[in-house]
Structure formats: structure tokens, C-alpha cells
Image (tube, rainbow, N blue to C red):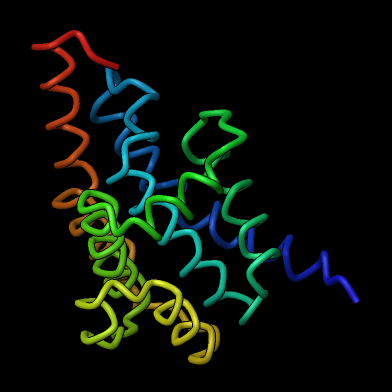
Length: 177
């Protein structure tokens, strides 16, 4: 049986949890082009963070359902309509793209700050993103402490926003997207 209710809860959890972080970046960097969200680092960071938050909220979803949640939440959070984002995530992951992998590793750090969950460092170091999501799903739902959002925001600023600032500076110099 297809469990649309779980998918909806997973989507809501990801969007509701991560929207304040993305909004913070948009407010701090209003000139940040939407194209940044298509860069391998941002795709890895936001894509894995969505998967981690969603599976933490509802448990394992299966690859197709998780991909659907990931795609819909990524579109909502990034405000970029890209029908191929799921394919991009798979391709970048399979190719072990260095910027994508760096974004994923940074997403794990944000997730740990947000939830107080510790991810197996061997899985993270090895870039085994699928097993990391499975590990988080097995842990079950939980939240971080009272300061979780502030802690996560500090890590988000040091990772995602730092990459966004670098991208924005490159765009100003090179006129890129």
C-alpha cells in the first residue's frame, strides 16, 4: 500500500525544518542567484539534508518515495523548478563529484547540530550517503535540544552560506549564474 500520509509528513518535516535556514540565507544574501541551488555543492547539501530530516521524521520511506519527497522539498526550498534534480542527485552521487560530496558531508554536520544525532563517522568519511540515511531512519524520530536551531544555523552559516558567499563573489567577478 502506498503511504501518501507518511510522504506528506516527511515533506512537511523537511520543509518546515529547513525553510528557516534557507530563508536566513536568502535574507543575508539577497543577490544570490537561483543558479547556486543547481551547483553540485548545494545539490548535495540540500538534497541530503532533506533526506535526513524526512527519514528522521517518519522512518524509512523506500527509494522512490524518498526521491519524491526530496524532489518536492528541494523545489520548494530552493524556489527553483528543475525537473531533473532527482537525476542530478543520482548522477552526482554515483560519480562521487567532489563538490557534491563536500555538500553532503556538510549536510551531515548541520543535521547533527539540528537533531543532536551522531552519524557514524566512517559512513560519512566514506561518502556512503544511502547508509547514512538508513542509519538515521533506524534511529527514529527525535529532535535536538532547545538550542538546536541556533546550533544548526551556526553550522549552516559556516558551510552552506559560506559556499553561497563564494559563489556570489564569483558571479560578481565573472558574471556567472
